Image 1 (cartoon, chains in turn purple, green):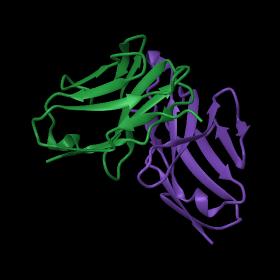
Image 2 (cartoon, chains in turn yellow, orange):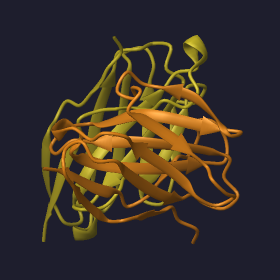
Image 3 (cartoon, each protein chain N blue to C red):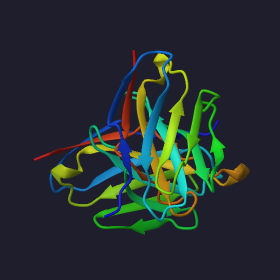
Image 4 (cartoon, one colour):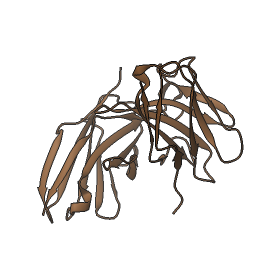
Length: 115
Length: 113
């Protein structure tokens, strides 16, 4: 079946550096992707999304890149701050087969920011 | 800023008991979802709900599970006869459009003993 996976389970960066969190997906029919941030004891917090007709989207201090050729998604965080420390999940959705909103989540990457 | 709320934050129940988890989605959202996350594992989709009926459900969402929107603001998940393996964090989410920008609540930690 389809799956979403992450290359790096943990990432440690220095405060002020840029962070890059990667995600590989296996379903080429997936057409919508979301990045979520989850802090300890809290629910996933929406960060940014991207549709398959785009290859880049920018938000405040975050950029998502989508490479459909190699089925790869990345989240870039500029000037990483201690408050960015959390687990980051990518999730995908495919309209193939009449999917009605089923988000498939990856395992998550833990980002640790050193002051 | 509007947010999804969930109650209770923690529910402890005995095996075989019924539990109802409650959610108040964002007020103008039309699509509602339940997900669960077993400790240390991925977030897993359970069910999506629109126009007062289930749109899609996963294999996890068997006959022991049901969802309801009893009024204009609440969205509930009922587990009829809880099992030990139902212990998890249960997240409610809502979106204005399908499947875009799903916003999650803080979760209910269900512990089945």
